[in-house]
Amino acid sequence: MQKLYGITELYSSKDPVVDIVAVHGLNGHALKTWTTESSQSSWLSDEEMLPKVVRNARILTWGYDANVTALLGSTSSDRILQHAHTLVAQLEADRSIEGASKRPIIFICHSLGGIIVKRVIKPTPPDKQPAHTKIRTSKHIAHLHSIFVSTHSVLFLGTPHHGSDVAKLAGMAHRIAATMMPKKILDTDDQLLNALRAGSETLQNITDQFAPLMKNLRVYFFWEQEKTDLGYTRDYVRCDRESLGESSLFLRHRLLYFVLISNPPSSAVALHPHHKMDVNSLQPLLPSPSPQTECPKPDPSDEIPCPTQVVHESSAAPLLDDTERAGIPAPHTLMCKFSHERSPGYRTLVAALLRYAREAPDAIETRWKKAGERLDGMRREEAEELMWKG
Image 1 (tube, one colour):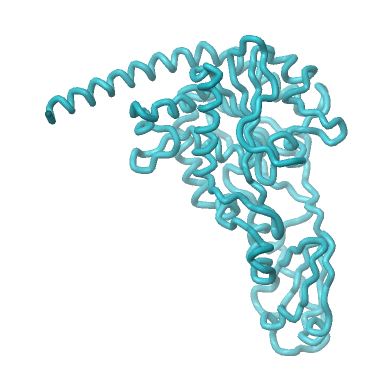
Image 2 (image 1 turned 120 degrees about the horizontal axis):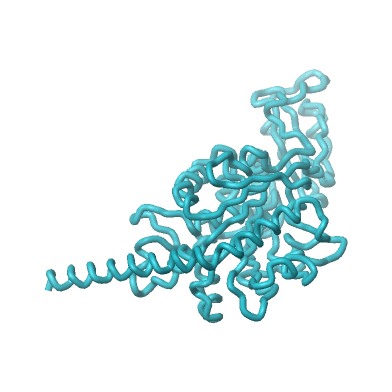
């Protein structure tokens, strides 16, 4: 499917009172992420699914470059903050053209998309402001503040609020592969993966600064209940220099562990299925010639089991006051795809959307009144300050 960036309208009722905005995740796509392969239909736009239940909504999807593969293909040149800036600017522009700048917003986020949305609407100190906060209320860019004020609720599907071990695995493969392949072929973005690693400082900062805002939002956390088969196999090879130095390996969709006698006990190399690698390049990594013995297997703590949960429940659905949480009986990439109205997890998610869509208009109208009063007060203070300086 062709790449699709920016805001795309999937459905609109005659007189919508709420905007539902879907934001895909890592390696996702604005349409494909929400579309089942069997029916090639998206539950966001199929008139027998979400539009049938939430009848008074405009449904949008936002696409961005989040293609982070271990080896080949382009990677997002932006970081989480730049993605957030772009989402705010494009969504505000679309809503302004539609005459809907004060319409309530409900975000549906899968995986990385949830981190970007948290970055969009989280409060930040004035000296480190993102795309919306207090400085954004200055008269020249106050329009960007509308996304912050209008956001009523967020549904997080498999978002790694506390990182992901799979991101750690991919990052390791990235670094090793980068030493073996030409720069012009290998285009990776380690910084985006670093931000997703379990325990990442970036992730923790975003989570900590988003937390105070949740009292003003309706938040629903969903986690994956089925494991994901990463499609890797593991081969343990003899680690003597001679056997490796005289052969080359042709790797087909596998994660091949070269187990070395030296510490650390293992190094992981992930290669494109049709990429041939001359393992002579590995010789500098190997110890001196050793007897023809099988290498010990890596410490299990160094490995991520396949299949595995991409984002564990504790990361995807933290136990927080005044939030809702539920599991979806699907693996990570399929938890946001529903083929029919009885698909597992679908009715739970859509019932929440319906409830939030009913609550949002009154709640956001009240919030806009309060925001207007605050803005008027700030304008008066600015005018008085200028008068005193004059």
